[in-house]
Image (cartoon, rainbow, N blue to C red; front, side):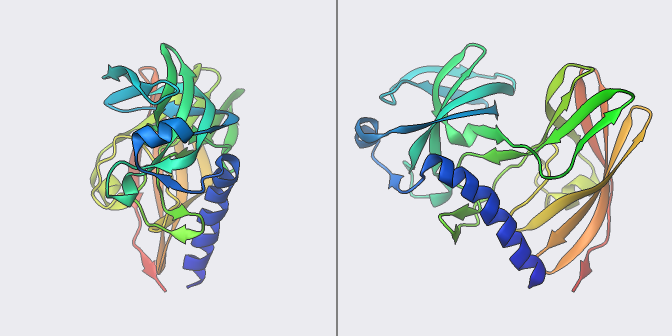
Length: 254
């Protein structure tokens, strides 16, 4: 119960900050009605935009362009809608509209394809031979675990980003799939490495060990009724970062 309560506090605090910024107060379901009433809150942030197909809308939510097969890219967040939008009967499909600016992209997009970059609370800024490296978490701008204090339990992806000054790298971390990564993600073969904090578990990086070009993260995971420890190795090669689970420790139940 202690772990579960602590997890809920972490989730609610993290998501409340986003809620306060965007005044996410109600749902809208009819697109024509939303386009005449929707207002946006100006913010100054960055995010990673990704999706097999990204639709770009104008201020009246009319589609002006659809871009397919674009690689994940860093964009500036300019504004976020003041309400949720949902054109299906599934609550977990809800999202906020987000105005973004980036290379060849300037307009409004579906927040389910936007992951706002956070200042990580994991204490993960470190230096290797004069090279500053940061590990940053992201906040999904679709319906997630918590909404206005209610536990929704909607599944979310939580990819991390690495900022590496020496290699001029700022992006996602590709994940090598193996037996340990499948255990860690409950067989969800997500292509990027995640540090999770949701209603299923909470990950905390306990230490970072550097050996040459290899960076090993020792991570402690808390579940609702248990905990375990595991290790993930990061390395930079071929102009990208790659993560590989080295193990996934036995879960100790309370």
